[in-house]
Amino acid sequence: MQRGIDLFINFRLKTWTRNLIAGALAIAVMLGIILLIFHNKANIDTNLYNKNFNRISYINLQGWNIDENAYSEQDIIIPEKFNEIYKKYNNIQQKQGWDLSDYKGKSVTEYVYKIKNYNNGEDNVYARVLVISNRIIGGDIFKMEQNGFIKALK
Image 1 (spheres, one colour):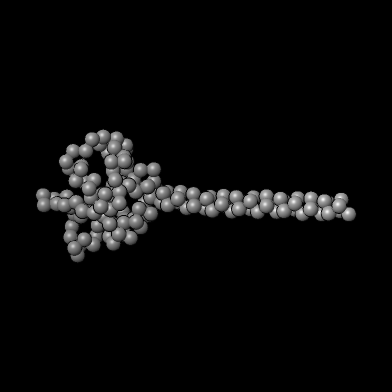
Image 2 (tube, rainbow, N blue to C red):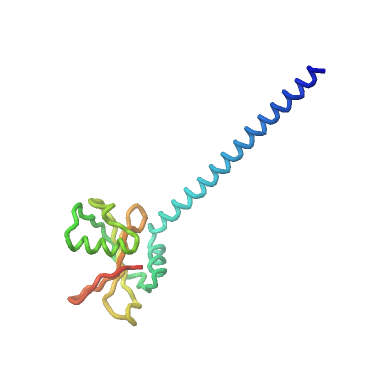
């Protein structure tokens, strides 16, 4: 009789252990899937701005209508050391949640688009976005004239 009880307890213990291992494995798989989903979402978000359409969409979301065909693209280098002008420019970026000091000495791509809806069609106003590794790291609107300005994009 004792042997039957021992077999029953041993069987129950093995079943419980198997269930525990299976449950832990299932939780690990689910966590892996969740991490994979969020990792892929982060990659999607950061890769949005490698195409002109997506940069235009981002600028449009900030409230600006732009001439989609009139834009320039050039590589620029963020200075290693900021002078007073660049400190003020970075202050504009920081107010928008960006910080160019993280990119000192790095090459970034500058995209400039002509804005069509600034103050009822005021001329010579442009939107600029700075992109590195397909991520927007800065942006502004500016007017290129003697009494010009630089303002936040957002």
